[in-house]
Image 1: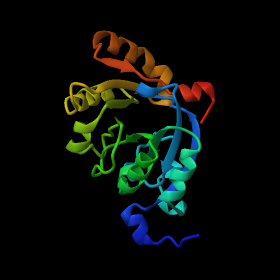
Image 2: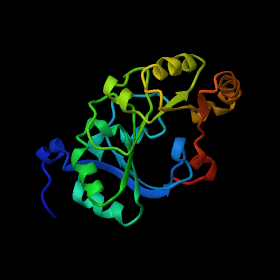
Image 3: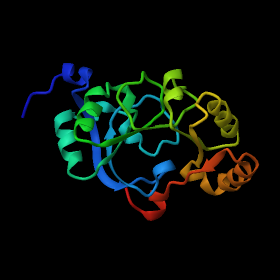
Image 4: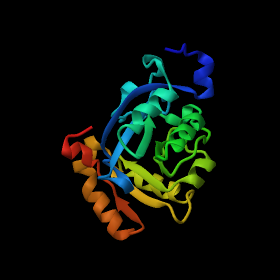
Length: 209
């Protein structure tokens, strides 16, 4: 096996791969679609309700060569979802270039808080209050997905909707532990503000990854 160095990670030719798996997209615009998920370790956005806190420490995940990641992905699906952690902490150009060379459709799920790298067919922006998206990420977003944990998140959602393009699809998604409390409020909100749609974590209802 080739030796992977810190320079490889800095260049994006190797990434701290937490896990990769083939499943259905559970959320947002592409929900229900067969997709291969590539979860990259490392995140300092620090959402207290994050359901993948184990992804935060990139040092837990030995760097994996992009070539290996792409070879494995190509065996499963034409649709790839890059998620985290926060994937834009790393240079995504080598990964997306290699995936594109294989003819794959590449999606990202990101807070948008870091410089935008990589070439994306679908850009899902999920902004967080404690580390806001860059203007470049907001402008690139195909889908805005705001997590609703409390009532103030509706205000935050409207602020973020002002930063994306008019073609961006707008979603409100209940934080899983608060779904019973927030869903009635979300239903009323979308009825009064129909530019928004409701997104659910259908993979959790289906009990799949």
